[in-house]
Image (tube, rainbow, N blue to C red; front, side, top):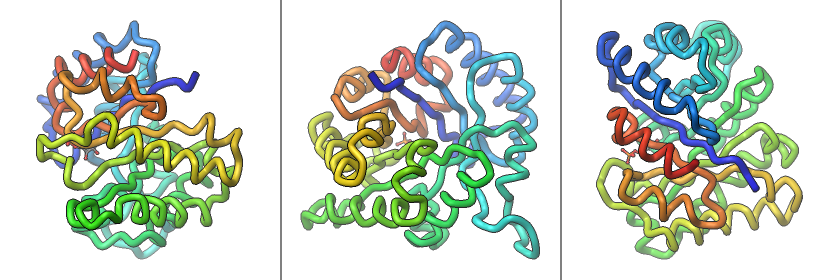
Length: 249
Ligand code: 13P
């Protein structure tokens, strides 16, 4: 049995005051749970949330990271910096990074390599747009995105990496992939890895993301190849986020 992971992606939300309340509530509610829980917060709040999580088992994560170690990269943040602030996870290749900030498959792969080399656990996002789904290209797109990461980190790199399938059309839209639609893509991801290494495929955690709510989490997480979730909007409401964590428990 693979352990489940529920990771909250706050995106560009939060304030010192709101974070304090949210993290305290999540920390208490999640304490008795067996699944892994992580919070991926904006860079300026890493120190605050790291402090709030210090005596808990919840993991801290960032939402992106530079593929470069250090140097003249104005505005970027390195793996080593995230490690200094207690990060265990980093989201890599979120569709918003790919679409709005031009991250290519190669950049995403380079970021994974940097994260793994520095001891961070990448949560690598893959997923198709609505147009790609409608034109029957879902498997092809997801497979291409995964292949770029695989060829950079090798199948052995998957030991310390989590995949998140996030159909772009389901993010923040209230539209969710049906449990069967999501399961089909998750199974295909696992098969692609199994073709290289069956053992690695069996232990790989594959999260689903895209309008996960307390109302649909139980059914999604009950699918054979769905090992938890990457949660956007619902991660900003302690009660909802905790209900989703319960569903993964
Ligand atoms: P929503 O849960 O708001 O749809 O966001 C999903 C997401 O993008 C998580 O990374």
